[in-house]
Amino acid sequence: MGRARLLVLALGIPGLLLYGTLATAQWRGNAALAEFNRLQKEHPSDSMETEDPKIAARKRAALALAARFIPDQSEPAYQAALQSLVLAESESLHSSGPPQLLGDGLDEKITVLLRDSIRSINRAIALNPGVAEYHFVKAMALQDLPAGRPVPAAFTAQDAVTSLLTTADRLNPYAPSLHYRLGAFQMALGKVEEAKRAFAVALTDSNRYARPVFGVLWASVRDVEELSNLVGDQPIARALLGEFLWTHGEEREAEKQFRLSASHHPIDYRTGEILVQQGIRTGKYGEARRILAEMERGPEPLTPYKRARIAYFRGNSFILENRIQDAINAYESGLDLDQGIFYIHEALADAYFRAELYDRAIARYRFILDRIEATLPPKQAASLRIGLARAYERKNRFLEAFVQYSRAVQLDPGNEVARKRALEIGREHL
Image (cartoon, rainbow, N blue to C red; front, side):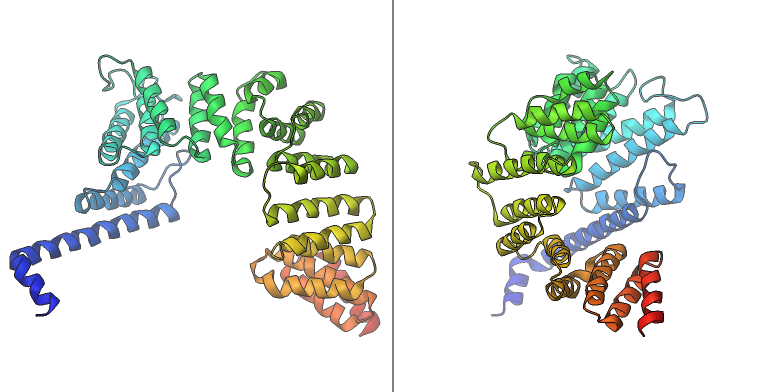
């Protein structure tokens, strides 16, 4: 007997109809959520700008439909809570009356939006209480709600907010993105120690969150000393603070932070990279190489990629000292470790050119262009084409140089160096 027939016998016609209805509802719910996500991508919510009422209505309708057809999923309720919160913030910022802070004498419309946000996020938490983000969003909405907000009698509003933030931290203690927002929120509440702990987690993703974290702290302190006291004594935090201060013109204080960071041994890889780049930036090439050597000897196991990066920085220090062959050796050793790091190929091509090894430079530039030109920004691709053209010129291969300069102009029409040289070669050699 076929499987389909067995299924009919087991479920009966009513069961199959119910199964089909549930499957259709699931499909319609997912389609509505997908429509919301499309609208959100095309028209991202931003409290700093007033959203088109028609777009806002379409988003709300899509979320309502999703909540209706997939009531067991928490995502529609979470997104609805975010929408209401953003609308409340936007309404407060763009009110026709005098400027208001959320929570200070809010009008009824804003209060209703905040209550809607709390109602939606409560549903999301009930469906999936283990998501840290939900508790954080509820804390924001609850903090903004004026007197009379629905909190248990045993708690003050501040107690409820603190409890929610603590829960969010406990549920996801290692997420940099969440902890950056937690830290900013804690700073706004005046909870400095809690903010420091949250920011310490955010700084573990230093590439994305160092500048935002220090930007929040910078706006909250009187001077550099107070900022330094907020950071803590972790070497990576000191190094990141030094980098931030350097970009803001506080060079003396930045160097102090770099020295404090470098005084911890052994130097871990992430801290070491920041210190090495600072050493190269300030002409302390020997010190940069000393740190690189310490990173290599340290107890932290290094991947081939990290070892290749160390070789790349060593090569950069040699280039700046005009020790071209030492730089070539460093770059080649880096590529022996990881052939996929294309900026090392580019650095090696430039070094070959400076060493007058023009055939090697040509081969290296072509290697990069053949593999990744299509993925590069036009200006960067044009720069590689110019490097290749110059190497062709040194070999007196003027037609090929002209082609490369012309291609560079096509990629970057504003590049006057390539345009001028193409015209000169065309006039003098072709």
